[in-house]
Image (cartoon, rainbow, N blue to C red; front, side):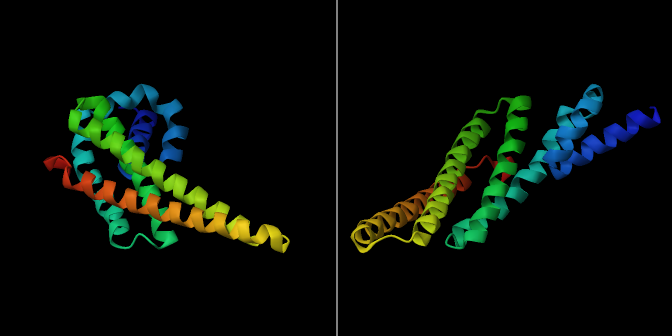
Amino acid sequence: MSRRRKKYSVTLKKSIRNLNLNLLKKETKKAKKYCKEISDEYFLNQSKILIPGETEKTRLFCKNPDEIDNIHKTRKHLKKLIYIIKISVGITSDRELIRMEIALKEVEELLGKWHDGIILTGSLEKLKIDTKQAASLKKFIENLNRQNQVLLSTAKLKMALIFKSMPKPYR
């Protein structure tokens, strides 16, 4: 194996193992022809290590979902988990993993909507308006906060169900 080919192979394997998406995008163009060195079996073995690790990190959300930083970290781990599962599904076409990927995307979407609601609430609370509009704005913010709580509760419930029904090799 040439030195350059080995360098790309090592970089690509490291990118997949660490799921460094920026590095993967950058190196993919150069290393595309060397992807064959990473066997499907190797990636599936790595995914059986990566999926439980990322799952455990997202379980923190179920324990304390009200901390904004915790939810942001959970969204990042969910994205990693979805990418790993998506690649695994491309290799194995496992129906359980496909269902899990779809369910995790739904949770990610719920958390995204929740985040949008938090940003909107923060922006609205900073508005300076006259007293006539203040009462209706206050009601709107209260409704928005209730919706955010429903989104969080739904996301928490869905995640608990996903983890409970997760395929055995990935628990």
